[in-house]
Amino acid sequence: MSTRSVFCEDAIAWLESREIQTGCSLVTSMPDISEFPGHSLSDWKVWFVQTASLVLSRSCPQGVTIFYQSDIKVDGTWVDKGYLCQKAAEALGHELLWHKVICRSPAGIATFGRPSYSHMLCFSKELRVEISKSTADVIPDLGDKTWQRGMGLEACLMAAKFIAEQTPSKTLINPFCGEGSMLAAANFIGLEAIGIERSPKRAEKARVLQILNENSGRKFSYDN
Image (cartoon, rainbow, N blue to C red; front, top):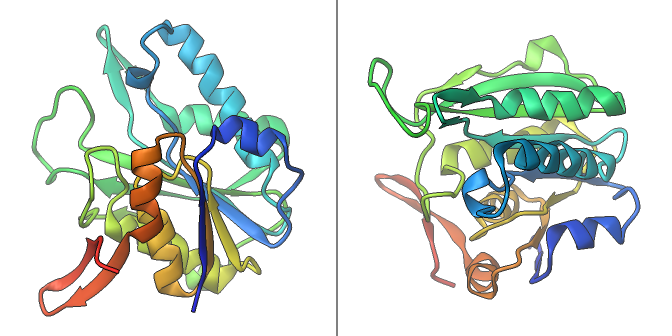
């Protein structure tokens, strides 16, 4: 049975105290500006790129780093987090392997504070993907979620399946694991999972979250 470890710590401090994580790939969704009330938009962008660079730097060359990010609209401008992730990756020499769009609302529906889709971008230093193993670029339904900021179940499973099938990684690390959606998906697919979460309440949820198969489909559950 796949194992899971969740550390209730600051993700940046945890990453900075470690070298490249051999045999691991990283998947995460980094905090939005709404979680930094004392930061200007410019300050937060600098923080985001620096932190994305730190996350990328801890993935082994044959592993991948996957970011799941939703853009925001601030003061009449569009903040493209996909661009910020690519800016960090380019500076470190990590290539973009794929860029998927995860629909958060049906096509044709106007949204306001956030766009109707999220980005999922996959980078690697040395790994290259086989074109014959490509999967859909647009995911119409993100799936079940445990909380507003969480990753959707279908997005989590897609990322975990890619790592298990197309990389040599046996362990998935999520430095900002929240309530553990990505960790649960990793275990469900058969990967070991490590999560870092500063909130004690969310860290405890991340330790016990599971994916259940039901007649109506898969869903998250806190049942042990």
